[in-house]
Structure formats: structure tokens, C-alpha cells
Length: 168
Image (spheres, rainbow, N blue to C red):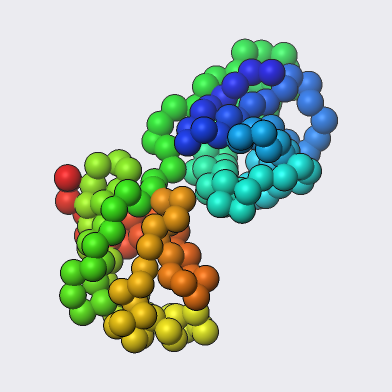
């Protein structure tokens, strides 16, 4: 089965003349799943939760390339490998001050996440605890995402977009 991409130990493959709907085959450390190209969601099999989230984001970023490869596969044409850019991950996070976190991203950029500005237009039970600076400082990185003990996990791609970025 042709390999389209490999990243973070995740292998993305696609068969020629495979059954609809358009999907990819994903392998990760003994787990296997079929993932719908349009939604990035698993339609069969199983992946660890974090891996499934990374694959879903990757599918959405590379949706056009995946659709083009699906058409090629149905025509028995060679498939094209999917090149970078890859999914953005957070490599390092450091509390700075006033509910701000300095972030280092996998693309070599750094930025500052201003949580006060972020919270200004958002509401939800998971955000309430983060208003307390002591709790806010308990953030950690899990699978490249910014997380807190109450279950809140913020997308690294979204934070990358929101931050004022500088080259590292």
C-alpha cells in the first residue's frame, strides 16, 4: 500500500481502487484505523486519543492533497507523497506574567499566548478555572498541545495562529 506521509511515528497510506467513502489508512505503534478524508475522523479501527486528534488536524490541513490522491488512486495513477508543512506542535512553554505563556513551536517560531485576551471573548466551564493564576500556571504540554489538569487542551495550530510570532 503506498505511503503518503510519515510524521511523529504515524504512517499514512492509501490503496488504489479502495472502497468509498474517500479515506486513508493510519498506523501507529500497532494501532490501525481508517480515517475519513473529509472530516479527519476514524470510521473503523482504533488510535490513541492524542494520535487521533493529530491525524484529524493533519487531514484538515492536507485535505485537498488527500482528495487529489484519492482521485489518482481510483484511476490507478501514481500517488503523490504529501510534503511539509506538517502539523504544528508546541515544543516548550514557559509562564511569563499576567496569564501569558511564551511558546516555542515545531516550525522554529516562538510566540506569546495572552490568555487574558483569549478569555475576553470566550466562556465555558473549562476556562473558569484558568482565571486563577495559580491554577493557570499548572499548564503542561501533552502530544504537542497546551493542556491543563481540568482537561482543557488547546490546539497548537490555533495557538500558532493567535500568537505574535518571532523566528527562534
